[in-house]
Length: 70
Image 1: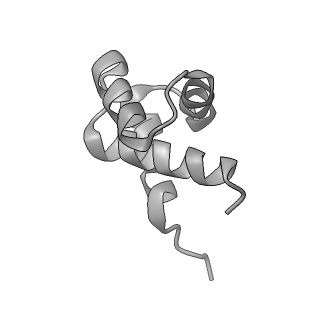
Image 2: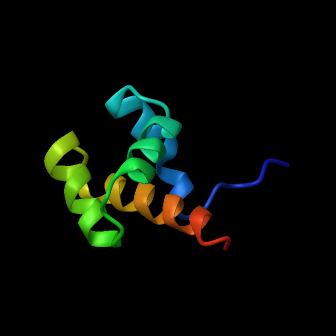
């Protein structure tokens, strides 16, 4: 039986399809940004890269969680 992907990662297939870049591309952008706060990063992805709110939020949440060791 296949495990169902939950949480922010559940958005990843649609993000890759819609925006044409692998998830690692977006994570690298987030990590290289001088911004550190969740909503600042979400707003930046929306304004500068044209992502929708849900997609930006999922990418930021997942990337920041990786960095915190959780």
